[in-house]
Image (cartoon, rainbow, N blue to C red; front, top):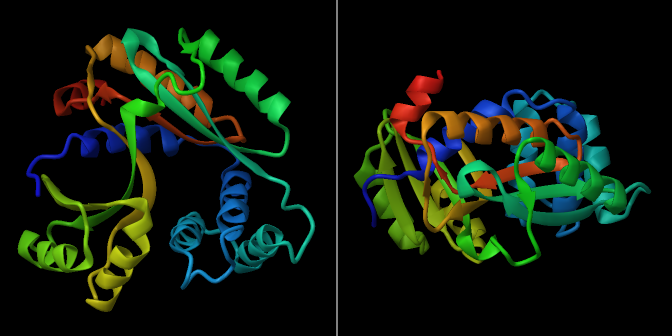
Length: 247
């Protein structure tokens, strides 16, 4: 079990760009469709449960959520959405994964390639940077509501991989296949996370100065403005000092 988490600062930088995403409902609808392909019951599908929570957080109407679920399960037409991951590099040698959900692969790859090139990055071959990231389930808890011992006890019993503590927050990480069980264990214990997601965490971080960090964040923002882009993951080490300098 770990102490300090650099993922927290990367997540804050990511949230800074997420907050500026356009076409939010379009993106979330695609996420729901993809998640529902694994089953339309959120009680049995952790990924779907997490996406529905995200949809409700952005005030998506319940009828739109239900329609998207039915498209994903095949009850309604319109579920032809494909999930893909593109790889490349941003400025400063920062590795980058671009997760997309699209109904037109040719359009999306052309758009992503253009955005990355315009932003000073380069597309990579499949497998060129994916090995630099681990897929993990991450639950984040408010450190002012729960103690580390409370979280640790449930996490250990549920089979989580790690508990990491950042100022003001506590994170529980698990293997993707254990994510549903870990999430349910906290639910049964009455301990509610602030967020719950399957995400890609860099194995190692790439040092960047403030100027490079700004360019990387601008590229992340440009990518996430595209309606087909679901997430952008980077290895940049967005330290607290850099985040403070960037405002």
